[in-house]
View 1 (cartoon, rainbow, N blue to C red):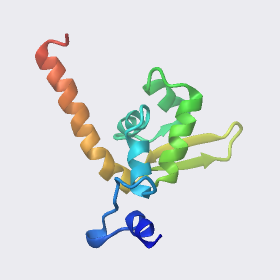
View 2 (view 1 turned 180 degrees about the horizontal axis):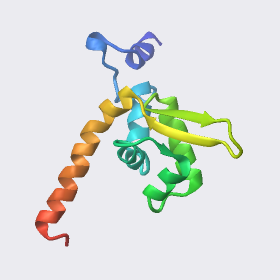
View 3 (view 1 turned 90 degrees about the vertical axis):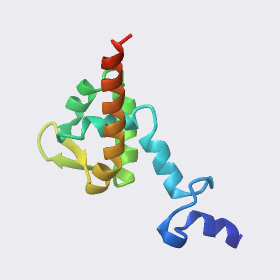
View 4 (view 1 turned 90 degrees about the horizontal axis):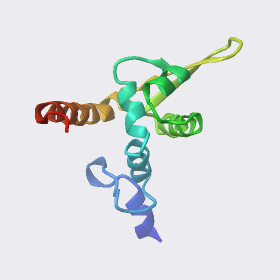
Length: 123
C-alpha cells in the first residue's frame, strides 16, 4: 500500500509519476490535452474572455463541453474565474501564472502547425 501512495506523491526532484493511474499530474495532463482543453488554453493566451466570447472563439464546442472543460481547468489551477454580480452574471476567465506556463509550449505547437501548413500551401 505504501508503494501506491509513493507513486502519487511528488518524488525526488518534485516530480510526480504520471504513468500511475492515481497521479494528480496525470489527471491534469488529461484535462490540458483533452479535445477542448488545449483550445481553451490557446484562446486565453492573449486576453481574458467571458464565457460567450470563449464559446464564439472555439467553433464547434457546445456550452456543456465548454463549461465542463473550464470547470476542470479552474480546479487544476490553470484558469481563473471571476463572476460579476450583475443580472445576468458576467463570468470572465483568464490564465493563471501556472496556466500561462503550461500554455507556452501549446502556443508554440499551435504556431509551428499553422506556419508549417502555410508553408506547405495548406493542403
